[in-house]
Image (cartoon, rainbow over all chains, first blue to last red; front, side, top):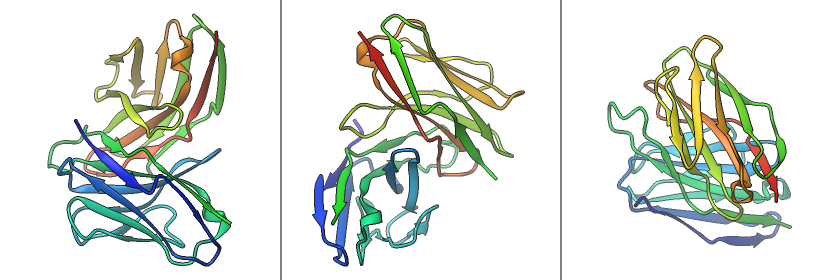
Length: 116
Length: 112
């Protein structure tokens, strides 16, 4: 069974503060993703990674950084949090093996972030 | 460029009603199409995937097909139940690309 975990599950931060959201996967998947979910926008891709040491910008990367120190871990970093970053954040992992074009993404349970 | 459009934002049905959710896609490649379901307080999870046009995928009473001619794909269920209340996302993965394109989601409420 695929397993993606996120921490913390809930976070309240102050404007201007630094926030780090963590994700761990035990699927041995190469690919990992960070999305935010907002009403009316669905899931929007922030950053993604194809393996340890790599990070790529997604569709809405401004204000966010990402770090992939190992196959299992992928972090999302808000250096200077703003109220507009209040959202629910989801991490996902996916199989990138050649030919596995149908491979699904496995999502974590989400982190609810409130920036005051 | 590649994209997925999901127009229905909210759908309210009564139990035993017929459900139909439609998405359209755009890609220059060969798509694999997915439907994800998200229950309250959880992350999205795969409901169905369809890899071949005009073939059906089915799971938990839901069926999905896609029409290459109209570049559309849809999710249907003959008789919805209250437990089906959730947000449903369509998604596309184009051949050779590792990222997904998600629709904006359809929030389904089923009234008992």
